[in-house]
Image (cartoon, rainbow, N blue to C red; front, side, top):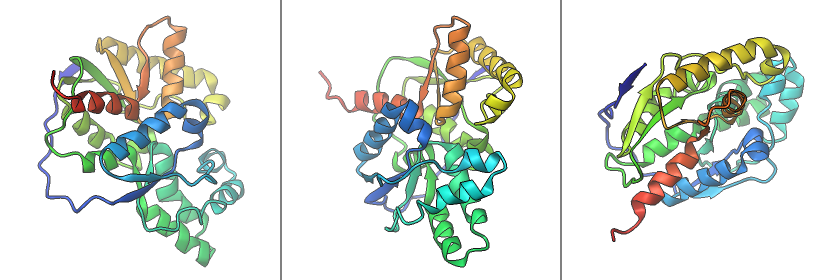
Length: 266
């Protein structure tokens, strides 16, 4: 384990932020962590962007797709292709679901010209929450709160399909009062893997145990992730071990720090 405060990379001037975005909230967030979804909306709106939430959205189709049922995944995706008619970014508070939409929805409709075009257009506008927020925040972030040491966990898809692990590190390192602890199992899977954790519970539990031990070894005050499935798996493992540490969605953590930074001085 080592402690690191990672410097922000050199950046070029960003184009003007969009006035509106869609939020694709994911089914896990909707069912198991709805407050994190509301927090994601509030963070984006605090940064001056309106959020639209199409009520007809459901699952991204990844559980069926990765379990070998592409027809079922295709049916789930097809029902949502017309929910995002405006050319706005589609923000997804999950690297896993973002990876499914960006990379695999177009493949599902490769033999269907009309739907293929719609899926490709959606994929091109899909952005993971952390990446989107990092693009809105300037170098000087109005953030406040107690000094704390933080660990970051990124899902496999966020890391390998969306490439947002470095974005998350840079964003957290730019928050005043936050020290980032890089644990020695950071690149490894938490063991959730959607249906993998159900089909291979012993292997999943062993992977989660390795990850939890590495996080606890840092002595961090809390850990965050942008993926609800990983948080469910790791928090259950921590609970079973009797540990007091819990992870939270990065949207909730950011909202708390940004809200504190916005409070007037007294």
